Length: 426
Ligand SMILES: C[S@@+](CC[C@H](N)C(=O)[O-])C[C@H]1O[C@@H](n2cnc3c(N)ncnc32)[C@H](O)[C@@H]1O
Image (cartoon, rainbow, N blue to C red; front, side, top):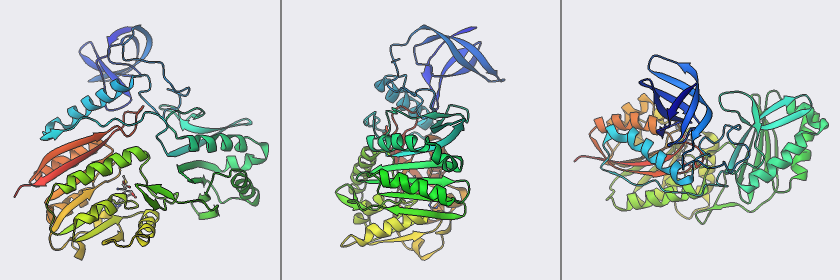
């Protein structure tokens, strides 16, 4: 057994220490802990270990407020005090961003630690008569229950409890056997439940889903999909979802930020960034989702475009646009890779907003960007590692990284959101 002092957290589940000149990665350690480790993996340049005993407990440790931690795998850092979580994220971020030398990096904006997630993604496992709905346990495919989860919003937890009871009835066995995953989303008073099935449902399965919808009066929509398409859509009239004083339609397959308070904080920051620039020319929002950011930023420009490849998000953007008295954005449903050398990218592009998925920006899009040269680029990212790669390429095109804002959008996990501002030299 080896004794190690934990120095810091990584951008990941693990904490980090040193042993015999090598870095050792340790899940669920806390900076300031002295621990006895069992080494689980030995490579040339690093080790992995698991804590067998905490010899000296870090003052930054706490008892996890969630009954499912760490088994459920959804959260990674619930054993750390909230301030320590944020400080470790800031430290990890400044380490990742160091080679980019941003002119300003603002402190991470804190957000509520509990009840913030509006989307719940459930795996399904069968063990004898017991059906478990939940997350995969860390580094395994064992499904762990999410009862009492502290980061999910109350609406999701209530439907989850009802769904768990429903699926555990013997009559629902065939539905459970045919269900790959279930997604719940509460954007109150709208509440959706989508079943993703292995095979098209039988009449018995359709009846089971109908019964669940009938008895769960908070649900506004239930859908069932398999690879063969959509098999069921049930709808109950509810008031629309209101966000930033406007009504939105957000369909089950559309992207929407998981954390509403975080989404609002980002929109306020974006407004203050765009207010401080003079804009002459077009605005393009690449990866625009349902357009929450596009509709805010279009006001600063003469002409605006929103590009999104997911049909459902695109249609929700158009549905919202119809409710506005004026909107100058043209939404286009296509891959970002295909917009270059089209009329949209001709003429003066004043600003470009990027909010790609975790994988970041493809090389094809990056090559296209080098040809359109907007004066301002804002880049909202949920993955600082792919952001760093992309930011290096953007800087090589002649941009200065003026500022980086960060938001603690996913407390309890190692994840974070950054918003960066690039300005092209004249
Ligand atoms: C992180 S989300 C951002 C959405 C939006 N900005 C928001 O915050 O609501 C990324 C979006 O990019 C879309 N997307 C992913 N790859 C794309 C591509 N190659 N071209 C266009 N859109 C893409 C996804 O469907 C998703 O809606």
